[in-house]
Image 1: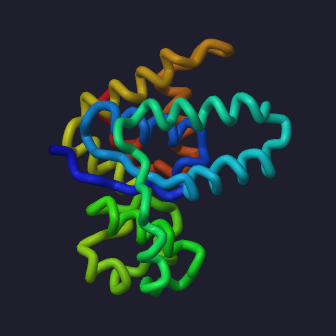
Image 2: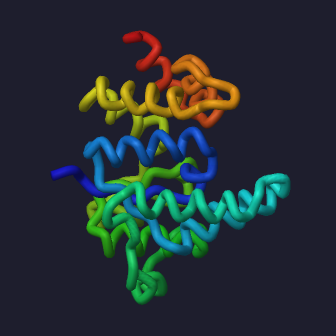
Image 3: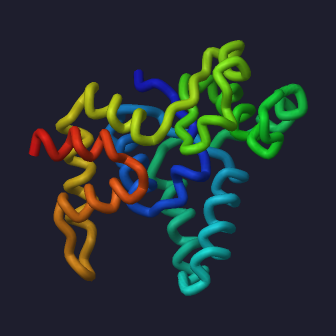
Length: 185
């Protein structure tokens, strides 16, 4: 059985990284989890920062995310929040979701917001998206590369290549993971 991870909003915000993380879950490498509040943060920020994006398309993306990963939504985690201590109280909902989901990892770009001493009692670790994807490559490079190829194949206007996808993932902060994927192409 795949281990459970909670994706923080910051790693679900960039579209190509979001696509890769979802495809990693679809490939059965992990059981991905998130909450409505995490998705609210993603899509509120997308709407605010990218006003040119069609709100109906953003709503559709959210709906597709929910359909793409079986059993992804964590519910009833809110009562745990008040008992948790983190540097940023606005991140307690992410840790609460991880505890409720019995996740082993929180995948985030904001590692400082999830210090080891706050997560250790729950046997949860925070990892960067780069380290997370690199670990997935170590576990099953072919499945991760297939996910990158699927993303490239899904790009129609303009068409994309695996090199294009890797370039976007590099801009999203996946420097070591993309280097590992490029070295074995």
